[in-house]
Length: 322
Image (cartoon, rainbow, N blue to C red; front, top):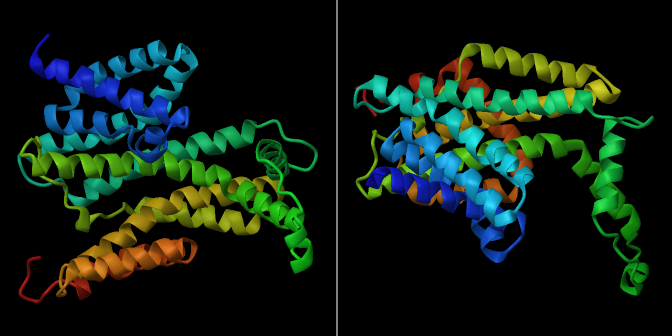
């Protein structure tokens, strides 16, 4: 086994250990593995090439099986870590075709679209095939959440302040059940997107990156994706009951790439002002504090950028260039 193959095997095993730690809710797993277990696989792709990904994935699957003693957890590893990284490895193939130039923003956008469409198809199919009770899918999910999460006791302080913890908990359950499938899909996609971006950054800093950093600020989605999102959003608004619930979560999932295009516009604009990092830090602090509102705003910004060409028409200096 060559040195490169050995490193790929070790990286696959490390990512698998991080995922097992996350599933077992250890401190390391919660802090690192829950979000970054795909990172070692992503670094294998963007340092050694796509050809070494299967070797790292096999090592990871074997590690999960041996450590956990469960083949089912190995299947989870393949679904939540290996599969999305394999989808994003299309960027490596695109980088080879780019011949040493940064990956074009349109190629980056199409790759993210395929990742999100897989999550979209999985969630929609899963919800459509779900065995729901007479009250529908959302009520079934709410009942399952209610059985898993512990009840909040009605304390004396709560009674004195007039707070009905049971009613508050029921409202939280309703909100969680309504968006849970869409949030799960976002988590599946974001874990990989963050790992790919962070992996490329680390490899570039260590001078180990195989290809140049993609043109993130040029991120652009294909036209057909906006049509798909619009049709899904209209279906979510028009349909009721289970069909409306499925369409609503589908629209939430398809909103992720639009948020990324909105963020690309923000970063494009920030690159043209003084104290760029300070402005971006402030932006992300506010965005995280009001995530629901900012998600909608960024979706709108992404849509506006597609139709109005904000970056090309308003943010590019007349002399040209970045």
